Length: 80
Image (cartoon, rainbow, N blue to C red; front, side):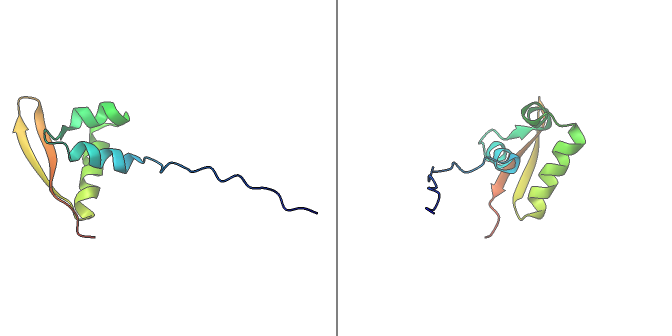
């Protein structure tokens, strides 16, 4: 019997919601809760919980007020 030939297709890294959220939080302009809601289809409390999870992971996240509401952005990366 011959061994089955396994094709090696390079797989792309899966883009997780966490990765997408970090990208939004790393923007110079930051991100609002409403923008996170639209991007992921989440409720406001879920968006805030996701930001809190990033804080617990070691990211320093700044919250500032604008005419659009609270704006969140990462000011210091987590130590790895």
